[in-house]
Image: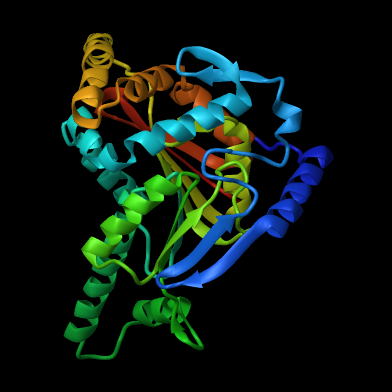
Length: 335
């Protein structure tokens, strides 16, 4: 763990972003939670408060070098194009293993009733659905224990009940799915409706680099297979820390560097030769899935990304390799 001083300039920029963000964000009540709309950003514009300052900066879009503003627009278009087939392609590309990776995320998270989750780049809702299901399982198990208890509760049970209840009773667990792409959110909402998931679930249009939430609002921040598509990862990490409560946890599930040389060769061959073909056959979009493969190779490896999370101010940062490093689960805490 390393302690780094907070720079005045960064604090001023963060304060300015908050003022501008709040002045342009329209928040309305909706069944199932909050609905947030950016008046300043149209579906394809990806405009940002400090876009002018970044106009001359270059970044990568897959293996291409492009201006930062252009990457944002092109990434938006990728997910707009694949939204309807996104979940089907995840199953096809990973042979269904992505489900196990997401289950592992929830197992490590181990959320308790009353927790507030922010799932960024969570468009189709996989993480949020698992979170709410996990919470319901925990609540049902607790109810069964209480039903079986016929004698005076132990001091541990009294302490637990006291800590999770307030004057209005137990706090409701909530999951907020935040994604900048409206088409992805649309698919997620349709899935939620078909599953009968309404209570405790909100859908918010928002940018990972300028989250439309006040400070210290969430217990857990997750981003699964989304952070490599962010133009300025360092800024997204700072925003994650800002919206987390003290003691809150950052968790990121992302493709990473395969550690076994033999597996790495097989993985590369499959990625470059098969995934774009699957994209063409299933989603009718070769280029988007070619970008997907290339973006994975451009993303920092496990150790470098761990350092970036620490640089953003998180503590106790660690990672677990899944499937030989095809995916890594990073986590850290805001203290």
